Image 1 (cartoon, rainbow, N blue to C red):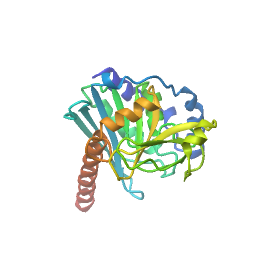
Image 2 (image 1 turned 180 degrees about the vertical axis):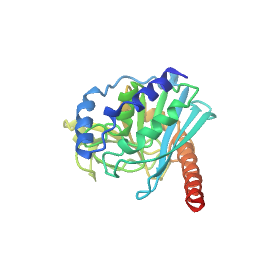
Image 3 (image 1 turned 90 degrees about the horizontal axis):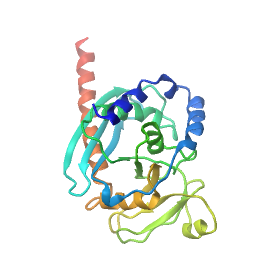
Length: 260
């Protein structure tokens, strides 16, 4: 078992880290947010990247998580893992990490390789309490994590240009499109992420620091991992894999119920 896998297992087994009460979960986020650390990401030095995602229906406890490790340069799959679980934490915006991270950590315990960077389908600092799933995971493992989301939870932003690689800053505030978020950033608004166009004339993605990366490096890595599609390839592969596994798991549960 790798050091990362061993740490994921220890974190997963800590009962104090997984409160079931939403108020306690919010309090924990606020305490842990101070531990998020930004540092320069050497994108050229990144060899292995793991894309992480989960699949579940809002009103169904069945959940599948996937970790897909890819070569950051060739985008060839090196390793992939899926796990299934039944979630107990309620579906509450801003607290998804308490639903999603336990199975994600379970998937990480099964990896035999150690990714240089983890890329989550979700937010890091672009979160009302600056502690989305990417930051939560990064702090727990003290490992570089990038958040790349398909929608906005928190933050004012402008629409980037149509060209691939165009971007605008996301600044603190409730989610809304503004005329010039770059001006707001220049005037001192807190920058919490980037709106990044990964494909020409296709909806952008929303990149934020999770832990132990910087925003410019995180955005550069996401763009490099998205040569053909809107979503970074490791996340796209993980999304497809966990979706397939969840359907299989639901069928298995249905067969078990019918056999009772």
